[in-house]
Image (cartoon, rainbow, N blue to C red; front, side, top):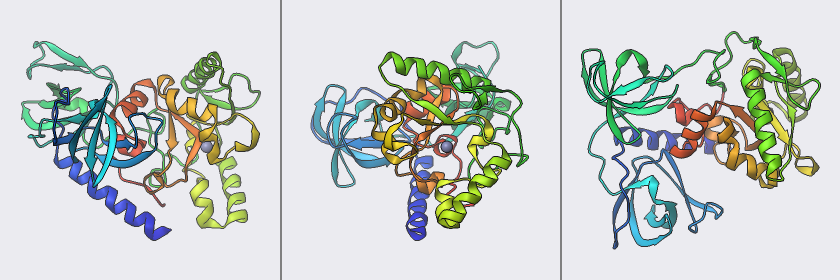
Amino acid sequence: MARTMRATAAVVAALILTAFAAGPASADPLPGSGTRTVWVVAADLRLHARPSSDSPVTVRALEGSSAAYAGEARGSWVRVRIGGTDAWTPARFLTTVKPAWQARPVWVMRERVRLRSRPTNTSPVVATTFRAERGRLTGISRGGWAQVKYRGRFAWVRASAISTAPRFPTTSTLVLVNKRNPLDPRDHVPSNLVTVAGSSSLRLRGAAAAAMARMRSAAAADGVSFTVISAYRSYATQRSLYARYVANLGQAAADRVSARAGYSEHQTGLTADLSSGGGCRLGACFGDTAAGRWVRANGHRFGFIVRYPDGYSSITGYSYEPWHVRYVGPDVATAMRDGGHATYEQYLGRPAAPTY
Ligand SMILES: [Zn+2]
């Protein structure tokens, strides 16, 4: 198991390095006809057996991978041959223009930064970013400005507003917490915890609690219901919870399903475990319930991501947990979905954290 996870991590690392070397070109309308080479512009593209997102995922590809257009399109979907397999993807994740420029990922570290058409404060505004928006450096800079590519277009940004190694403090709604990134300090207590609607004792940070209430209302309007069964957990609570897992499962198995104290996303007050009752409480089968499917498809609209998706243990360090949602805000959650970033580690360009 451990060897498989290490091997998977090595392959993922190699693919990520490849992706960093080959930046995306602008996504132009596909197809045309006949077989020709196309390039993947999504960071972690899942290709399907049929032209439907409900069909099984048969191939995964990272940004910069090449594929052959297989000459068949249905609606907005196209069939490609990649890694020897034919599979389907929405055309917007592909480009027919060979990525020509070298670039590195970059993140905007302030909110609502205005990107300019030229490296001056007076040139026209091309776009306004959100915090932690992801783009690419073209490698060209002038004075205190850097040229970047955002949302398919070139623009200039003040170099002081961006970072190639994004890190957010423990108090930020964007903090990354995993086995390599503990809370700081380890016994951190969020300052603005409020009671979750419909619960007498469970608490989340204000923004996450409000978003959770909106999400549950929207789900109810679609005839889907679920409740929060765990939310903020203190350092002390997590310590005793983890100790119980170790006593029952042994340390190696406990580490796949439970965080050590000081390393739990629940301690940020931004994370909740959901249940729709029945036999799938805290079980992988929650992902196949109406609630699990609804949250996976709609959570981003309210700022929530399924933090430990299926098949990414080598990056997140945890088994598939379709019930465990993390609040990162609608901008980042939607950008992750649109860009095909399955994990928060991949979105932030941060190393995998399979172990402590
Ligand atoms: Zn959880």
